[in-house]
Image (cartoon, rainbow, N blue to C red; front, side, top):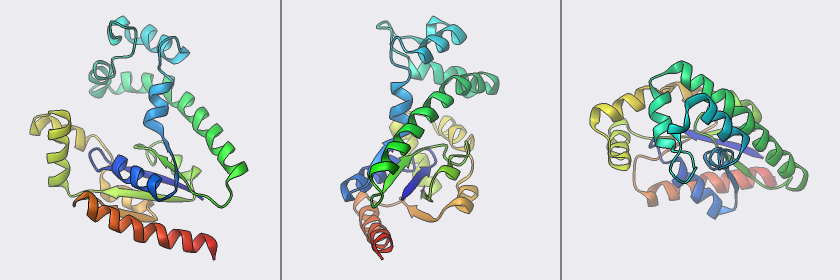
Length: 201
């Protein structure tokens, strides 16, 4: 069973994926894969520097992700250029990990944590889509606190994404993460138990 775990910014996907790992799932965090493919001396990082300039690097030669984000956030052409460099490499690595998992773990659960699962069409790679949702007021507060943003900056980032209500159309399971970590944990225990019972029937 392969589950695609997704959700909008500050919805708490990482909290949910961590809990799923504790419950026994194997989790692949595509954000982590995305960081690994742009490590120093990788082809992807060299291509990014060629396209966007050495100003996107830190002094130690690593990618300054925050600087790059400011360049592409308000520039659709720049974002597409970046995605053309990174997305194929991320997908290649994820496909390899899925293939490896499928060969050896037929009775297990693999969770792909992918922020843009639906937007890039990866929901077609998985057996189920699990969507982490959050109350918009809670989302705004979390994002402002986490990224030290003004209300206007936070709202701009939230509104740049596909709305939660649109993503719900693709979801097999919806996990409301507006409450406390303990509340979402109890919800997940029930969802996970139902899934395991289903797989073993």
